[in-house]
Length: 219
Image (spheres, helix red, strand yellow):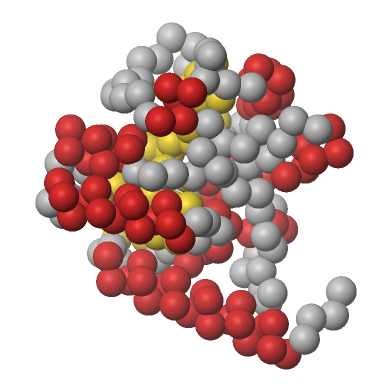
């Protein structure tokens, strides 16, 4: 597919701005707690308040959600909590190389229930491999959804990934009911741990122009 020079320039500038924003809020080498699809910031701001020694970053695509989240940060004076408007894959390869994930939270992502839309789901093998490539050994991945078929799909493919191992009896370090969780009639959760196995290379994270657009969470 051919892209217009104006579009390529727009994407390049967006990436430059994102890298500058991340450079401003993160040291070149650190570990972070990442929430993908951070919504209005209810969960991550509570997490940052409960664990002030941890550096927390929330990512969402919607500007109004980021604005509301940042107001919560200011109100709580949470110097360890940041929110960034970004697409998930662009965020991954805009991070300084030495920034690693110690925890990853994906809470109530868009389930894309129609079969023809399943390709748009965030939680897919290649995306989890991309996360693994930026994760510390023993990093934890926390996933929760109120759409049972989505949960079953992730629970089915995850054991086939050498870079992640399911932890069936692991506890969550924080339970905090968000607006989205309160609306759910029920939900299912899983926890996985990063193994020592190298992450499988995937073309979806290649930082060419224009960038690949991954599914994004709307939780």
